[in-house]
Image (cartoon, rainbow, N blue to C red; front, side, top):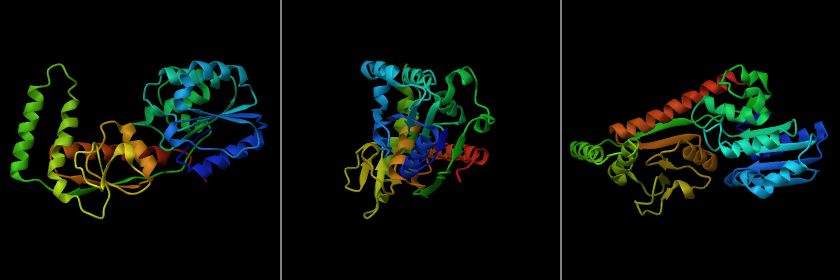
Amino acid sequence: MIRIGLSDAEKRDIVQRYIQNHGITNVYAFSWESFHVSFDVDVPIEYYGYKDIIEYKPFYHLLEVIDERSLLVFNECMRTQNRSDLTYNCAHHYCNQTPHKIVFETFPFIEDKDDFMILLDFLDKGKYKGKSFDWSFLHDEDVRAKPRRIIAESIDVGHTAKALQEYEKKKVQLLDGLGNSDPDTIPRNLHVFVGRYKAAHILPGLEYVARNDRFKLPNVTTYKHVERRDYIVIDFPHRRLDFNDFLKTTGMRRVQFLNTGLKVDQHYFRELQHWIGRLEEFYAKASLCE
């Protein structure tokens, strides 16, 4: 089964009930290290980090002990969009040894619905090998979602004519110096650059998050150090996965973004809105948790 958007308590309940209903004798639980969940179960359980999946010693141990009465739990293990990733392939070897698999994810994909095939591969790699995503798959398998709806709000701080001039100059400099480098570095660098026009709008008493620690303020933290609270976004991380992790860690449902109105800020905000739209489309077509 695949369950999307559940709390840790709900995950524990699902695992307990599955064990009781299916005669499970052993549980092997895999989690991305930052989102580890402990399960209160009456059978032996072994815990592994996502990074352990590919390690030599755990790999051969698990191939020996997993059998048809074992339950595998994959918790927040969608860590790359590469469906052929070596870690996924190692996990599929474990999955082939038992029909009992539970896959938990906060969001159904990293970037778009095609990523959901990664979760289906955990259930049955052979069945879905070579297949592209189809909405019918949501109903062919035991898939349920508890919508975690995200709202994006723009806090418009504006920009001056001088700021626009500096921005255009910086863009030209980045283009001229690009050479053979990845062109995606240009919007990444511009997005950080325009943070200078947001500094005056960072207010005491509120918490902010930025891509790095350049602001040197006690109420501005980086994505690596966020806690479970609300933050106002100064600039977004480049990778969607990093922002998804941010939402998981903080529990935020409303994303407020300091927006200068310059094109690079508009681009990142628009990309977030599009991602939310894809999320809503998935929820609309999936069977929802009762």
